[in-house]
Length: 335
Length: 293
Image (cartoon, rainbow over the protein chains, first blue to last red):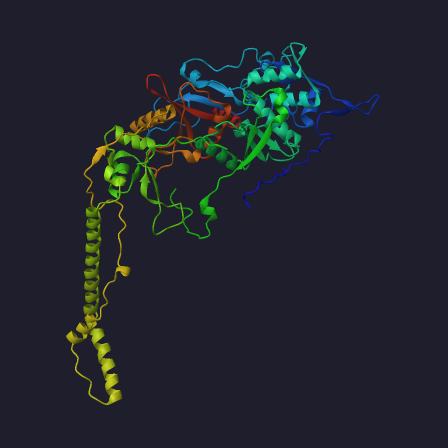
């Protein structure tokens, strides 16, 4: 019974109505034909794909749950809450004196913060962190042309200034490279502009592949699950590549965490795998390893997308104590 | 799916002698892991018995600091000689003999202790027989009664004897003991782990394996029987890449089990550098800032 895939769990607050159609392909028109094809535009800036226009944001997010609000946890709700969501941050701190008698204090001022990483901003970039850890006063910084620096207002504790001349903070929608490419490649409903140049499919592929060497593999998995009807979102918070939702985050809890892997690759070590299994147990989601089988033995190119095969493996921890027919009565014994 | 292969090493790090196991734990802070089956509690994995299995790093530590020696006995590679086999049979026979005598002795003691009752029982039986046949019951003394019983003690058979299963060679008549080398640590990762283990041990911690929590080691401030682990140590190469996924996974596991992630690496001067990963929850930070005000 416990070996089968767990089914999606509906959220108690599932009061949102599902909009139809559920993908941003067609929209109603006031004039002429009843429906027309959707055409949205996004800007490629500093490695991120950003939707600025408010209507476009609504279309993209509420039909298919693409993207993430830059000042919110998920749904672009800045206008409603007027509060920028600062996501959980991970800080690396040096241990000055590691000994058994003085443990590292919680949230202490121990050591100096070497730089904090806003996890939400790192979606597909690997960061060379350890070499940064060594140099004593470097801070890991985003690129200085960060999109939001141009619009960011400092939310300092204490007083708020009401300045009419201050730039208005508006929230934008940020898409994962996989999402942007999917919209362009499958439906051609998104145009991505880089300095006013409309990037072609091939251009987009090359750009994203260069940015993230794992992009082609991740994209195959993304396309595969989207085609099956799942809403696929970033699984970074769970330590995986993607998280799958049935119908979308407001309706159902995410059911599966996907780890994407190349079929020829060695894969995770036992220790890393046990960490992933542990996390998925804690958050009550099933872990699926998605193996991509390529035909050719070189980097995946756009034309080979159709020839890929996907193998799914459901990983679950098996505890012998729960499967024993004899009750030894020592389940709570010394660990 | 292929999980990374574990390099093949000589598996020698099993300890059977209880005195050694206790010495290692009490004097040297080496914990190891019991992996054997307890005869009294079979078919479960919650409580295990000897042998104690040492981690590669623990074993390497012992060898490096001359707490133990690694020897090979070439005799063990071939079947035992007739001499050895005879010696062993001799030991078994002697054990059986001792048991036989002991069983008899104990039975005799039992009979002597219950001598009065036996006498009474026998007298009653004789009286009953006499009453039936009409004769006088024959006289019976205590000595006679007891002797009778003693003669009736059954002999111990091989099938009922206790057999010792040795956890140590009873007669180590191996003459060809030669030191042997071990090729651990060989890979870069192994070297880093061994160095980090040594450094953590030198600081006074108790260290066990961290596979359960997705790390390399679990670091305790005291004996694991009395303390919970404080840190999950993860060993990383100095010039490596740390992906956001790894950060997220390790931090999440640590938070859910109330431990801290300790990132360990060894720099080019063979110095161990420690960093720890702190997860700052946005809500908690806001609340703590408000309380400070």
